[in-house]
Length: 435
Image (cartoon, rainbow, N blue to C red; front, side):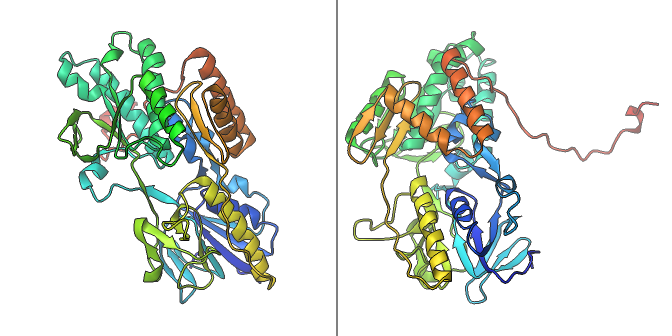
């Protein structure tokens, strides 16, 4: 059993410290609950800015925040860093690598992970973008390959080290493509003066007929125009079938020599074993009712990307975006308080606040419920919305300073190849010791 003090308060166990789980924990602080927050990491990650870490624009610490610091002096919050292995809904327990935890209310907020659609080669060789560590891995891969490219005299052999393929034309794919194109234009000529940056091709491959297909047609067309102005090669209505680590294979017969494939083509929910069969739906998500209660269970809820609340208007559930997660968490916090006080609960109703994407300096697209705008003003709105969503005053200040510095200097100062050195198990040479 995990060491958590027993209490006469009802215990809410929250699995996941992302937007949904963190918001729920914060909103339940003033209620008469004992809160247990479980995550495999000891920090919250701000996913919308992962790509800026990968593109050397921000430090990882600027978009991550320690969970324990967030709940300092909160005596009713207990944080445990572990992985959940399964749920026992009958015994009202979750089983983790540290032991089991009892719950009165369980909230699954495990978010989503990259969906490789069963392609093992792509899973093995492509680079996803769902964590800070994966963003750092991408940064290392780009910089290491450009260092190697300088040593290769043959043009064809050099291409697979230079070219980059992005799969997926959603917000993540579009933002990565724009950031890479900016790096190619402004940064690489200064860092690698002996490299002909015109040899670098950036491909954006989208299986649909347009980019940003969940946004308006105006935003979609404008984002494509922005990327083409940057020199990004866009391929629509094309799927990537395979990737062997050096060549990308597409369903139209085309191939692209490239060692770096950034996979932003889809996500799947992080469902946990132990839930009823009727609660399992396509894409790794969990079927919930309009109160976010998991179908076929009692006192078990799911919110955020992993939850699928299916309605006539939304037969596949709500979009897997941060605003849905935050709004569901707020509503569930209110409902749990009402449930504890024998008051009626209120069904969840999503309020669409709009969507946005940035495509580099002074270029962005914003869709609001009633109108759409693009360009510099949209880019400014994108900056401030994301800045104020960051957790921690220090993080906000550091990110703002980085953005101001990058804007006026056309420079990114974090182009470091950082890898963990493996510990060698060789015996120590006694002759190497100093006398």
